[in-house]
Length: 582
Image 1 (cartoon, rainbow, N blue to C red):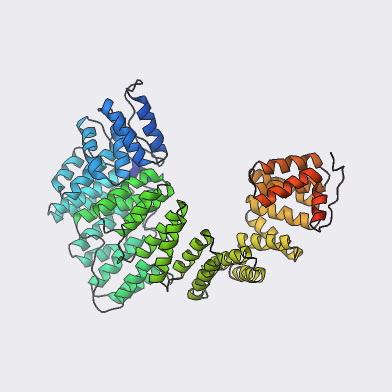
Image 2 (image 1 turned 90 degrees about the vertical axis):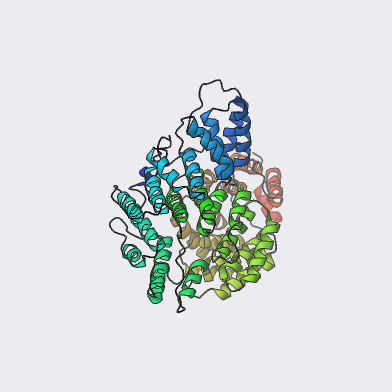
């Protein structure tokens, strides 16, 4: 999906705080304000707070910062750290008084000002927002310019508000953003023709589109009685494969009645949209903890904005804050078009947190209520596979494949994954069929080529074909240790032991702690007579906690040599050029 505008030209301006220290895209996870002095009264609590903040453990960070502030209440670094932690947890009522302490102390804090502006917007205190921004107590040039324009609209002065949007448009690098928000402002007061004139032609610098801009224009066109044009706009932007939110909008547009314009319905929504837009831009190339501050403001001001909740949840998920992420996903109501995507995100969060049982319950419930969505059935397959229900996973993947159109590009992924599960169930005929069907859809997919090629090698079947598959996979991903190891292993199985050494050594350097890769290299060393090196690699493999069956085999090789073990297994001996007793 392309964006409405490229972020490079003005990203630095977005991040340039009014009086704050964060000046680059790698904004600090911990407070930007330095601790005053070197003899902080409660250094232990402060260090514990910084450590927790560095791990994005916001609950612990807030607790430690609060403890540290009891002893050193006026310390700006402790104050700002508390604000960051509480805002990350969406606890603006806890963040607000601390942000006010920062302002009262004369400390310029970007996040503190953001919290106070968000709180004022919650209370519709538009005069207060204008006064704060005019006094230099803002956040950043883009945020301040657009927020002041929306606040001016909140004061009932449309002429001055449009002039404020025009001032943003006239600022170097900010024109597309100013035009987009001006269009939203016009639509919010019923001037749909004026809004469409902008949305239809975003102007210089707008080389592509954003999903929300397309949705806004579709709603505007519908309000103008042009539902067919709105559908064409959606189709041109999103194509045939659409998520439930877009599919729901398209379906409603197929009727004769106009659909409401609900992207922005008030100045408060407008400020939320400013925060969400900046968060979306920052998410491309900025640290999650910094981006989260904007996303949380958007979520707090517009709880109905499912996109803001989803963005906050995704950022928290990436920060390993699974409870907070799950709570953010759960804020999307069941009757919202984005509910399915939110539940899919919550399932992934539960899986990452290790809560397989609850993830299974959520996935099964979603599959029951939305049985016609292939990606829901596929997700159920993933969760059942995690839970060890491989037969159930195959059933779910099969249901997904029955629902996907034949030409859908997602089919190869489901075929591949079902093939892996068939392989784990020792159903090789079905597994090979799935892998080959996946390759028919995506002939050069390296993971499929590697998995099928390696499986054929392990089975001792079609080795020449397997070698060709793995060579193609290595050519596509030469730094993938697992795939490079597969190339060495097929050489080994073909008896080309000297050829196996180089790829296996490279694989061991790429996957230095992988027990299987190191074991394979040991076998190759043995086969060419480098017995001491073989024993070293086997010992090294044991140190990486291999599976019990592999560990037992390695110990047998260390005790009796590879060829004795292969003889027990009914395999031919390798060509040993040295005494195995060495």
